[in-house]
Image (cartoon, rainbow, N blue to C red; front, side):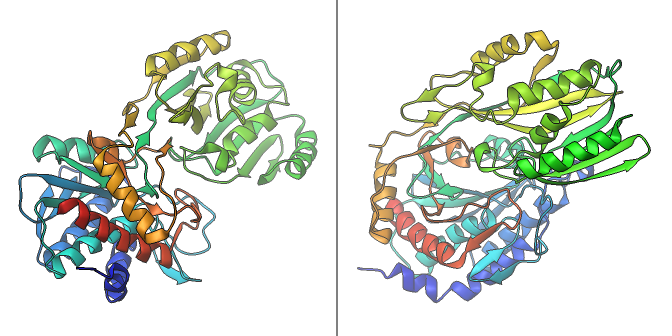
Length: 467
């Protein structure tokens, strides 16, 4: 029987959008200040999880909430279990939005909202794909679960808990990346470069420096407050700096106290070159002036070893694998005060052929002269790869080719998706080769055509895999 998947999506698109908008209206940023035993990563992610499970229950599926950290929507019978892993938590909104990030709107056939692209939109597309299979009463021989997480953007606490308490699927995919497929994911590890609070001896005194929201985001905003007897000179130099660099900003002077706010461009930490790191640009500007102690070291290290070093070459860490590509580095969070000292979070995405230990050893050697301390962050992940000749990969690529007319091919990314949770797990969509990537950025959107086309592809692919 030939199924017109596109038509099946078309007749459900109004309902799909209504359910998606319900999710998008929920501020589901992890909030550690509001964590309770009943809301392990905060009330927003919990509310979004409950809303998604309620949609599945409304439609007659078997649902389960696993500790308000994760849950699933289940269908089918059989020995084998397929998992489709999505998430309803989102990264912080940051600044620069033209609309309210939690009031979804359609403008020029695009849905603008935080989570529209990463990952509420694609996860809802996968759910509706399952719904189509169920509605059409198509014969399947396996069980499937749409598994929903609430902490993908932070520490994956949700999936740790879920997989400890529920059956691990035999194979599956995550709709949280791009087509044609992601069958390789780089390893991930964050290292914290730590500085003492000393800032004595300079002409200028750094009072505070702050940039970044998350390790896996390129910082869009940075702020520094410092005292300076040469404030007029600083102000003139800043005007010239803005003219010659891809950033915007403001400077205010109150006596000898100077406040600078810089605006760059946010991007996903897996592709730091796509953003404009406000933190490194601000440090590079301030490094032109005379600061003292570890404040001077903080600025100098950032300017000389981190600024524009997306491949970490100046840290002797540049490396490229023929299959998985190059190592990348994102400086995601910067802080400094005289009392607490300073810290820079360096988030590495590394291919096969590199190890966490190797990164740490080279990082310590490269920065030894600065007198800093290197500390490993949590939640590291090893590289993950599913061979191109695996039947899962071959099936998903064949469906993609059928729906797009484009040649499928394997690829690896620096991002981390739930696909790596399974030995035979990959990421699959929902972005297409011609999609505009706005994940983790202001004015995040998903194009309606991409959303509906992805839903049709997911339905066809899930049916093929469940037969």
